[in-house]
Image (cartoon, rainbow, N blue to C red; front, side):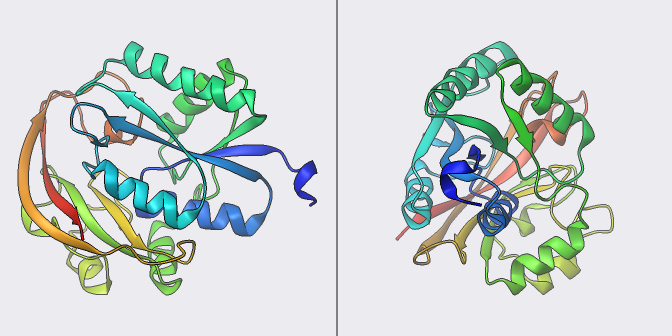
Length: 245
């Protein structure tokens, strides 16, 4: 389809493998003119929300992809009203440049999809899910075959120990996952940072830093992927600090 006749869309970018594969597929599909990446940032620590990746590394990804970035700046642990207010401000800016669609890398979490669709419908935005209902095992192996490389930056202690934090996703990693852990971490078991991809002009050089443990109060509602992994109890995460070279 001619670019001027394609609907405009923005990509909800976390810096991890699902959003990277989703963006790659969306670009290949050519259904949309993708104008921007949109990322939620913890403005206190200058890191990608939930993933804990430094803002500087996000900017490197954005540079290698070649799409402009908008960030949703949120406090340490935003409540729903704070998050949604910040999110809608950026969505309005994207609508002003003609965006009618939002692309997400969700795979099978029905409640999260429903939340996104309901909230963005209020703003006049239609959601698109290129990976929806595909086999997570097939997706992660396709991800590896395509030449993506990613490192685990965060694991949920309910599912995995700290030894998984800082590991590269490869066949050994996948074979070591317990049976109750989704291969794509779709239930919030782990999060990742992509440092090489077919949609990057160049790989990103990184070093592994220290592993830290943080505990959070369980959220009451689902506003993003951090809320797909906990029940009503407090829960902890191990984070591997990834350092730019």
